[in-house]
Image (tube, rainbow, N blue to C red; front, side, top):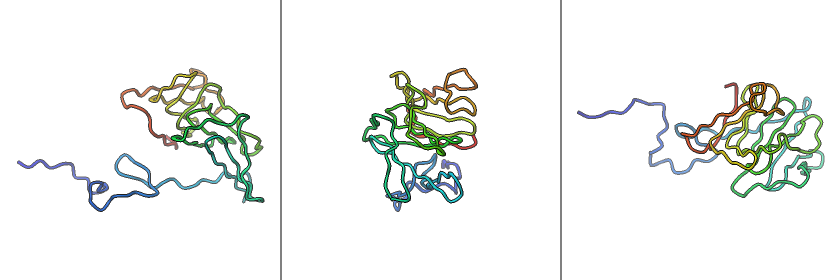
Length: 186
């Protein structure tokens, strides 16, 4: 008897000899998917604001001069060369994390500089899932928990007190360290 595997005609041929490099792609459950497109943060019709993160600073692009303005918190950041800033939006806020410093936040409409969103809470990944800001691979009070997912209170990106307005966390210990996070409706 010959064992036949599942019939999966729509799956990518990862083991084919023709696939050696995947550019502008990111890993998916089965194969690769396109790298996400840039998303504009708009203050008003036709006004776009662009932010970027480096190892020690967060920047805002100024369209009129073509320059990058430093909008970092006082003292800057300690991003390691193997990490990077991840960004998400929630209401009027742009929220950023870098796996080293406290999660950062800035008002998209009023501007200013980034500031700590929650003291003592940092994460490697951050996103928005419906009415929550969700962080993964977190460090709290100096303790790193790479298999923890943590989320804010419902409709409140500034409140992260566990047990208050649905803010909570979940340890996913049997899967190892969390290596990415996707947002959306669910």
